Image 1 (cartoon, rainbow, N blue to C red):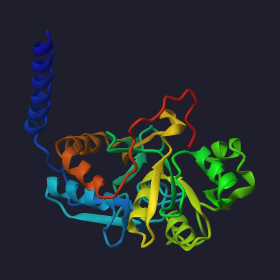
Image 2: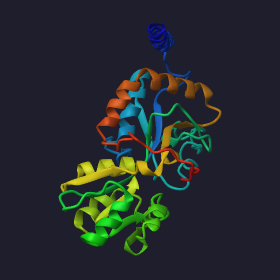
Image 3: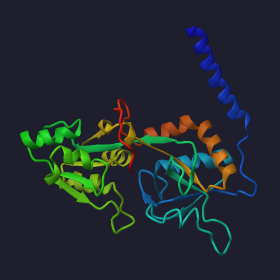
Length: 286
């Protein structure tokens, strides 16, 4: 019985691979470039030097289609979609760009492709400080037994409730998520505030936490907040306009064919582990 089940799984996998390879991946009629909507100052996702993981994944799309990758740059803020993928250039009569990267895997303003990454909030602190933090309650424990830790948190951060429940309200230093400068992103809370000692521990989105901690000259430890539960794991794909169904099909084919390459790219950006995420009965809110 077990051998039959294993054989069936192997056969299913081979059929899936065959289906992707048998379907020719080619540009849409009239398509001359992979036109990406992105933020030029938003590492680890993207930047104008093409150093982000989304830049590298977009390059894979271009490679598969044999097309150059072109960018429309706009800050990843309120109005991003309206000013990029949904905006028509009055000179050409065409939309400015055709795919937005790292879009929540829920149908909204855009239609999402198959997802290509998931993550959760994380806690970051300086290593070699003489204490270890494995969960939010450890911040309270260290604060009462060793030193009062200053906690850095973005306004309305996901970890807010857990911090308040652990009696840490007076130790939280709040930061505005979007600064007045569109070239400065959330990584600053690790890159500057935590590294300089202005705060002792930071709570922020996992991919940003992992990337900026790994780039810092100051040794840092990143702990995924898997204690928050599965409802706080959020998944992302690419976003296209709802009417662009054929384009979405092409992107999904590429995501399936090149999933191993995409996984390898993401591994270079130090995403926090999602092992042992606790079950959660709470509703998602982000």
